[in-house]
Length: 124
Image (cartoon, rainbow, N blue to C red; front, side, top):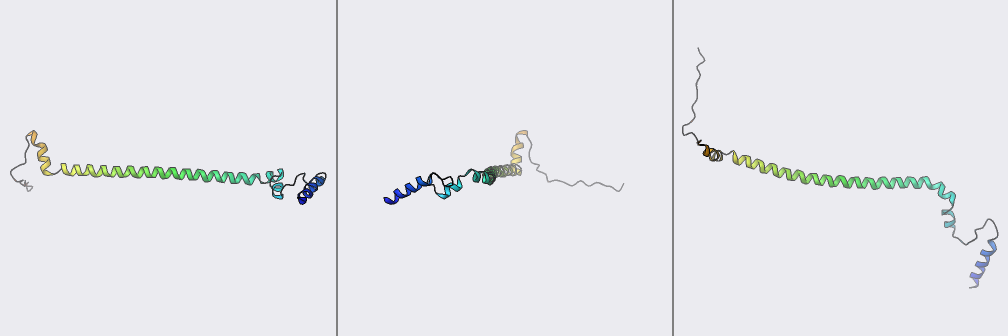
């Protein structure tokens, strides 16, 4: 207790001198929060702030590109399945039996005679 009284008396005794601070403030607070120190390090703080903004913007842009890429991959997969389905339908509809079934309502039918070869005489 006596020690605290001596400290408070020493603070009040040194308060009158111009070089000493009026309060018993830790040294790191006196150094960090001086006006000159803040002004001196302001460009570095702005530099770090700009780097942080660029880092955040880059992260957002990368996430956006990843989302777009995933969406396009899903779309390509869906279009691939549509292509395979259309190709399968065309292959099915171009079979001989399917073509014959589709033209039957018009009265067309398959020829019962085999095809014959035309011979052209070019000696004349």
